[in-house]
Length: 371
View 1 (tube, rainbow, N blue to C red):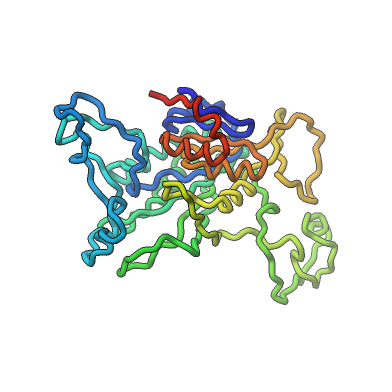
View 2: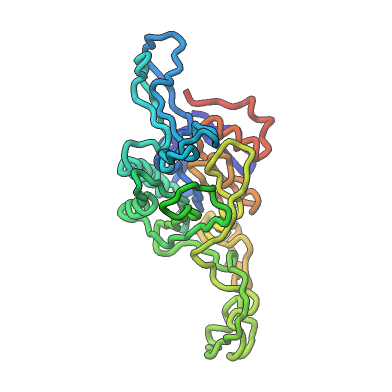
C-alpha cells in the first residue's frame, strides 16, 4: 500500500485502519480525534464483488436491501403515512448475489450483523491506536447511537465500556448538543439532537490544556470567600485580587461536559461530517503544540502565564491522527491550529474529497490505490 501524496503537515493513507495503523511508528501520535462509521446507519460503498458471474453485466441489485437513504423525501416511507421507515437501518448487502452468484467482499466497519461484532471491530482498531499513541496522548471518540426495532441500542456506551475493559482510561463523556440537528418525523420519541464524545487515555496522567478551552465566564455576583496566598498567587489566571473578589475574573470557567456547537453544511456527499469548531476544541485541549524529542516533555499550543521553558532545545510539533478521516475535517482543524496530522481512509471517494478540501488537487494524478 502506498499513502496518498502528503503535504508538509499532512499525510493521508488509503486503506483499512486496522492494517495501516500497523505501519505507523509506536508512540508517535499525540492526539486522536475520530468519528468511526456509526453502527448500521450507512453503507460507504467500499464493497467489491468477486468470483464467477452467471449473468454478464449483473448490477447485483437483487443483493441490496434499500433503506430510507434510497428514497426521495416525497416517496420515503417516513413521509408516506405508513412511517415504516422511521427507524430503518443502513443498506445491507447479501454475501452472495442471487442473480449471478458473485460474492461481496467489504472491509468497512459499521455494517456488521450485530452490535457485538461492531464493538469487536472497533476494539481491534483501538488496540493499534494504543500502540501508536504517545504516553501523554489523548483520544477523542465521537459516536452516535442507533435505533432498531423500536429500541435505542446504546452503541456509544457499549463501545466505551469495551475499551475500558481493554485498559483504556475513560476520562470523560461529553455531550455534543446540536442546536440544528437533522430533522426527524418520529412521533413516539424525542428527535435526537446530541452525540457523545468520549475522552480516552492510556494512563491516568496525560496532556490536557484547560487554559486553551476555558469557557466565557459571566460573574453572577458571587465572590470567592477564602484565599490561600501560597496557592492562588501561583495560578496563571490569578490576578492578585483580594479574597472578596471574583474567582477567575479573566480566564473563564473550566470547560463543561456539554458542548453546544451547530453542525456545518457541506457540499460534499457525506452525511456524517462533524464541524471544525468541535474538533478544534478537542485538539486544543488534548494535543500539545510541542513535544521534547529527548524526554517527552510537552508544551501547550499557546503557553500560559504559568508555563516556563525548561531549557530543552529539541522539539517536534504535535501530531493529530484520524483513522477514519472521511472528508478531512480533523486534518483541516489541525491545520488551522498549526499542527501536523495523519489520516486513514478506506473509501477512495472520500479520500479524494479530503484532498480537495485541503487544497491538494494538483496531487490527485499521483494517487495509488491498494488493490
